[in-house]
Length: 297
Image (tube, rainbow, N blue to C red; front, side):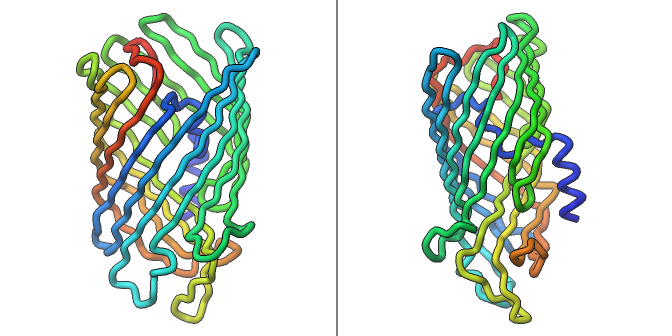
């Protein structure tokens, strides 16, 4: 099943590359998925900071993201306390350089520590990623579009691998814009100058190292934890002023996967995660004012 889902995601993959086009310099998000038939509740808290530096030719962007995942397990016949909490610390360095009036090139490299941090940080806690992509902006001021394509070395459902990168965004008129890609596909409607309603996909995941082996039934030792949830929902955003915005989202996951793996990524225990409702809220800061003509996710 993991191979099948991986092939689907590869068709639109932009996993781990969202920092390339995200204009927000500061963001905070909290997501909760209440307990369902699988008796598992999922919570994620994320904080992101970007520091851009203007160069003579192009721009250098430093990004740091912190993720805290919490899972509450019920109905499991072994101890889960060693992997109830997963931590993610992500650093990205990106260089963007214009090639012409409409074309730009983006080079990106980074590293992440994703682990339960049950002991001191070790080499297996690190995941590395890199990518190169090209972006074309076109259209008119009233109806702009943005096309990005490239290739990346990114973690998807396990160890990093080489994947294609592709996304397309377009504004059709004063009210409607769309974005096609992964993990963010959306259609947005501007209710007013300050508020937007958006139907979009949701993607929550982690592939974490377990610093100390977890003993599960059958005396097997798990060394990795994998979580994936894909869904869709409605999001409402409201701009408090030209720089600050708040948002709230609710929806339903249509694919969920949660497993404990051995060192070779073989499944040792499947929690049989089920589809369920999810809710999230967030706040973001951007030094640019919100222009209705821009194509921004």
